[in-house]
Length: 111
Image (cartoon, rainbow, N blue to C red):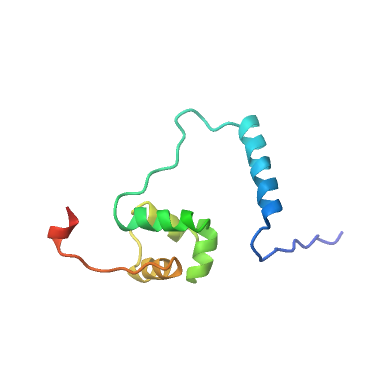
């Protein structure tokens, strides 16, 4: 028996597809609600929070952003957003893909 090949669609979803996907997600959430108290872990303030804000504003997933930034592992984007240790080159690539620029500030500006 031959394996069925799955073909990926590499284009933005149409308005109709987004509406259908949102309806499907809503039905699934009704049938399988998240556990009480289960929430997404918040990003620490600063770079992680700004990267998450910019990613969500553009409607990108960790996977999509990693692909745009040329990073092979989408978990790297998650680690950056959670404030975990990450290579500076990866942080710069993610920021650039989001149209952000990293900069240095004096400590007195960090208050």
